[in-house]
Image 1 (cartoon, rainbow, N blue to C red):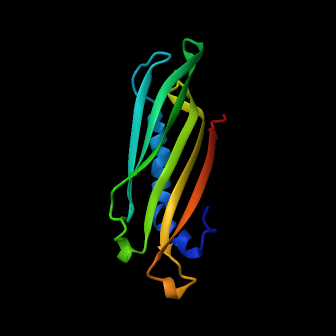
Image 2: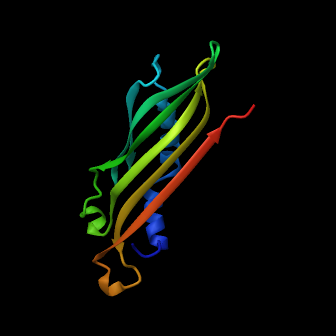
Image 3: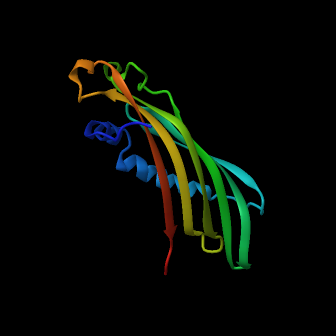
Length: 168
């Protein structure tokens, strides 16, 4: 495991992962709804990509499954299960970015969740998504100016548990 995040690590990460990119990721989760009629047990894939400045293309890849349908005709709720992960492709964040001083790599990523959808009304009633990812950050060691030209590797594990429920 790496050392705690420094202010510079946080600044560099914030430059790559902005509120706008996180909002786009949340909005894209609405893509879990297939937009067509599906049967219980049917599966479909969902890929959503976001460009992160200086880093590359971050893609959420998920397999979705309609697991249950509850209720009566005219008031049915469908439950969609999803599982997958993130991938990070290309971009200028290779070892040469910023003079070779900064690099961000995605080591591992796992995501899964459940979404309840009111099929009759056409809206999401609740959703819970969980994810775990490990990121490697190569950044200058600003605490040791003698080693400023040598990137220092730190590993960061991010665990997220996001829940949403519509209440009337």
